[in-house]
Amino acid sequence: MISTSTEENDPDGPDDLGPTMLARWSLADRSFVWRSQLDQPAGDVVPFAGDFLALYDHPRLYDGATGDLIAAWPDLPTGHAEGPIVSARSFSGPRRVAVDEIRRRFAVTDGERTTVVDLG
Image (cartoon, rainbow, N blue to C red; front, side):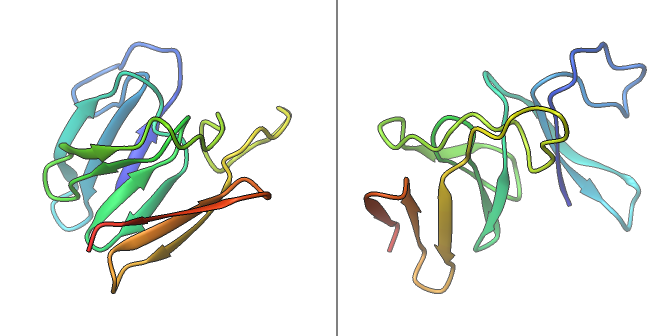
């Protein structure tokens, strides 16, 4: 399971996530497989063929096994939603995203144009 944090707090212990952290949690072992400090929030996180896309500001592809950044598309804006739960804040994004895991590609639309990223 992939987890993120956007809270402005100090972690209470080694098992807590600090601000803008990304982590993979093992349900079987009840511990983190890895944790990574990001330069910006992950935003919405979408599974992608064993890896995952973080969609805050622009798509970033992370390795699901290690958390390492594989690729980023800074010229493809996806909005600034910090996660899927909006609550009292106004909704600002992300743009609509479609994933084709079999062909290793994804598409992002802003409502006017659609861009397909093919990782072949």
